[in-house]
Amino acid sequence: MLLWSYFSVVFTDPGSVPPNWKPDLDEERDDTDPLTASEFGASPADSTNPRVRFCKKCNQLKPPRCHHCSVCGRCVLKMDHHCVWVVNCVGALNYKYFLLFLFYTFLETTLVTLALLPQFIAFFSDGEIPGTPGTLATTFLAFVFNLAFALSVLGFLIMHISLVAGNTTTIEAYEKKTTPKWRYDLGRKRNFEQVFGLDKQYWFIPSYSEEDLRRMPALHGLEYPSKSELESQEF
Image (cartoon, rainbow, N blue to C red; front, side, top):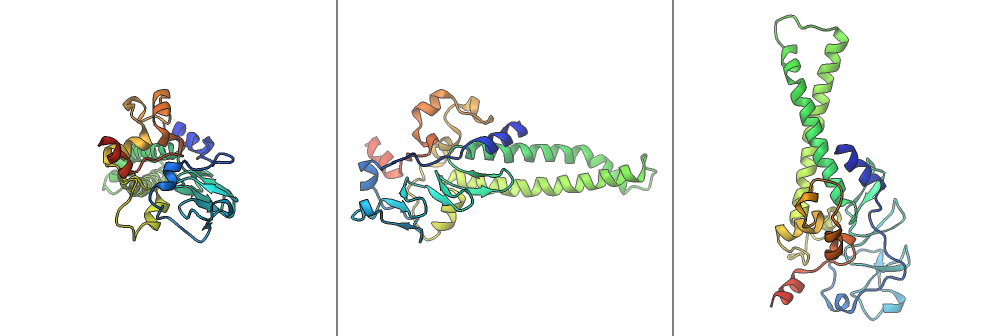
């Protein structure tokens, strides 16, 4: 599962802006996206509409929650960060796979740590320890490295779980610190489903059901319902 999740992150396109993409009228009428930066400006074709974001580097309009990656040299849908460990951007289409990669890496390193724990404890005992000095040193270092890696991955995993709970990304969490309300926060359950889908059978594997891909536009990285939109639909 670790390898499956890892290679899914590596070889899955995180999401690119479709050619000649333009926002729907509903998106243009909605609230202004609070995430703005110096690279965003008004499109020459839409200079009268400040709510439509435009990337000067890609020379194209930008969907909601889309950011430009300086490493990849393109705009990535719902970009979280560029990860050197997977040599790819983590975005809308592979974020779930990245989270599963962290989860299974934590389980694997924790399992190895627990398996080596008796030998590690015996290392400090007064009795004679079987094995060559090289074997003992290797066991000791393997335990220390796996324990350190498990703890570091656990911290990273907890951070991303909190981001999923708030329906935000690493970039958005950094840039919206002064924003009192986050328009895409739909509640923890719906926020989780926007990343992992509705089908529980697919929650722990790096894939989505065809039914989820068909009925959940957020999984494609272009359409994200805001809290106000859901409230208006309910009423």
